Image (cartoon, rainbow, N blue to C red):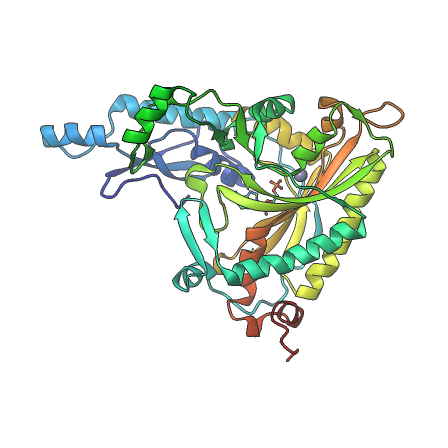
Length: 423
Ligand code: AMP
Ligand code: ZN
């Protein structure tokens, strides 16, 4: 974890302890990312199989006391014990009895040669091509916007090849919808809630005259805000399933495509363009009988394999699981893995010698069909699946492998965007 919620000059204390049960190597990343949500004082965490290191920032209140007592900042024993207890709860819940998922690799082109080795983000920021508005919130300039436009053309071609119908979905999603598909239980940590001022003249007047921000955001009291009816959408395909809820698919199947803003609050895991709070996703969505969904998911993968090949992208496609929250993680991840419900397209990031998921091929079985009563003509629940691409990550992976100069990009990308003759 790199980013933090720390204020300038805030004292940081390191806390080290042994996990209550050894954490298998394959789970260390997953556990580490969850520690971001364990306590607001945690500003960094590293997880190894036999050691957990936390960076804990002492808040302002503790510092005032320290100043009065003229003592160095310290964690009280109670607070230390509380932090450790919460972390151990996460460890036990995720690691105890966990079964190693079998990673199935469907495509491996990670060793394709790449022309570039550096992290493109500092240079993009220096050139004004990317600006960070806040943690996880970025504005993208013409270079990245055009590149995303290029990928969008490829994704739209994929959608067209299935005769997918275009949809436009809202950025907000009703809380009731999310409840119906069990989202609160599976991914509570990453939700983003929407509210507005209560319809009350005094509240609105008070706000208009006194609203102010400090380092942590608006200082307005929570009582000024209305009950939450909507969230910011975490994915695109849910909107299609809700549009089809309580209906019979007369034609027996449906294929759709849409692009949309998606939101996943990732706490201190928010880092560069790799992990954003607000990002965009293009999806191609299949609804119908089991075979229809599975065959189309597979065909989509084969078609994208050609697209990535012509780009020369270094990547791999492998089975994966969604980042379920602590209590749900072990069971749900094991289920997803056993039934091969998710494959990720992981592009190589040469600058950190690792990979990043730029897209996924998903199969939800008849989960949405059953939860939302989407029926096939024979009355059975529809199966669903989607192919989802993260547009900013796609651009980031491309720039990481090919650099910022269009001259060194694959010629078809140059030709499409700038009309340059092939070198
Ligand atoms: P998923 O539905 O989780 O498979 O997400 C589909 C794609 O969206 C991923 O493969 C990523 O490319 C992208 N994505 C998911 N979460 C984020 C995020 N926090 N920041 C940027 N892109 C994301
Ligand atoms: Zn989807």
